[in-house]
Length: 90
Figure (cartoon, rainbow, N blue to C red):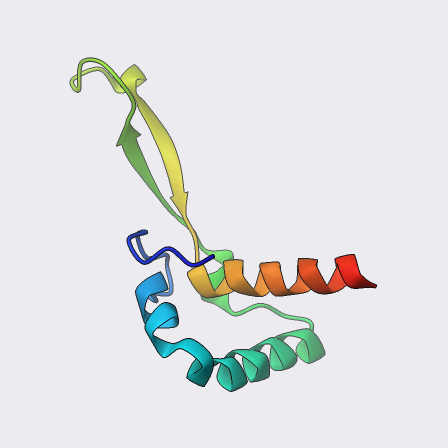
């Protein structure tokens, strides 16, 4: 499930773009997955992550009240879901 309100990853593509693109995006994403699988490499943006600190609880001035959150590519996460669902069927 693609959540529209999530932060974008290093590729700058939001879940909202994928969601609004809907079925029109499928052939392009399938082609991207095919190229990636045939070449045996991942796009550089899929390997990169942005780490931000998210406030947990308590005093915002204490570093211990924050936790790291990794922002990764939404497209890569969707491709992972496709691969996992395929492998479960095999």
